Image (cartoon, rainbow, N blue to C red; front, side, top):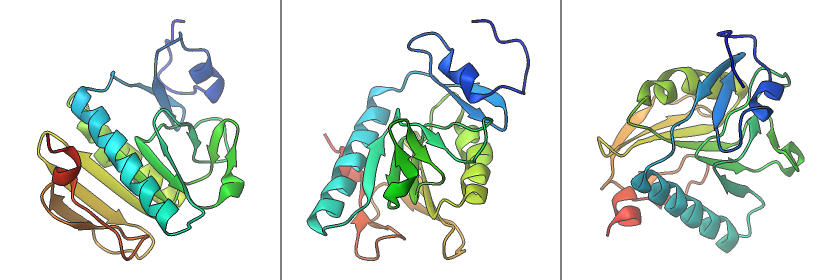
Length: 182
């Protein structure tokens, strides 16, 4: 499918992409996604596992989903994203297609080809959509930026070896280096 326009796309255009082609739609503009590298997948897998174990061990009702998992941030046809990890606590937002509305916690693992999309466009979109907490994990720099939108706290930057507090779960910390050590 040939896409010529720069904006004005809808979710139908995303669904019409060739099999295996991943893209996100933000305010009617399509952003193609590269295939993730091994370390990216390792980080996503480990985050999903540790968060899921935490939720289960505390009898929580939240659900954790790794990408590809559709998130329809706004009630329109112009926004469709696939965060690397999505934590959704309001199960009424879930249907067979994904999450309708803002997840409570999103984790994005940056891609070497376009890290600025996560730090700029998507971060702004997540905040305005009502995401409570957002982490941007940069494997190249071994840093994690934590944004607590719910408490309107300033962002904090952590290194992989730090015990990083999870804002929506006051008794959970995550050490990325321990998650992905060989």
